[in-house]
Length: 155
Image 1 (spheres, rainbow, N blue to C red):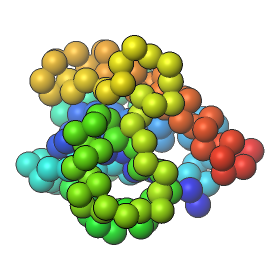
Image 2: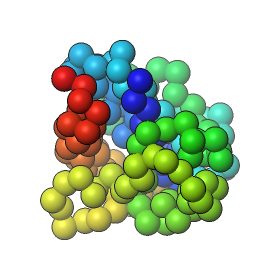
Image 3: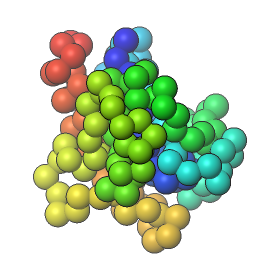
Image 4: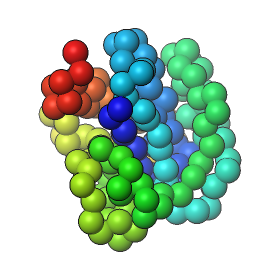
């Protein structure tokens, strides 16, 4: 089982959106039994909360499930549990590497897998632009899935 963790600041906007979109794409590819997906935040402000209403609305717009999703904070164990740990921005990357300074996981920013002028997924909690976040997450998730399929020999 290949395990993928998406990480953002509070785990209510970007990383749960990435989790839901990626889970949807994995299911459509027929790989739900081969890839496990989760998300977490570097901060603890929203632990236990459902995704942000903007994320929920965007997922509903595209018919993507967020069932059972609740915010959690990353742990040191995550660094040893996951095969791919995907940060939304540089700040998230720095913060999570303080929690698990050594990991055997492939650690990258989500936008590292696509050719885009942006290198970080803007936080819609502050920008209010959930459409931009969705577009970036959707495109990068497709590329990430191709990368994982290739690297893990899943098809």
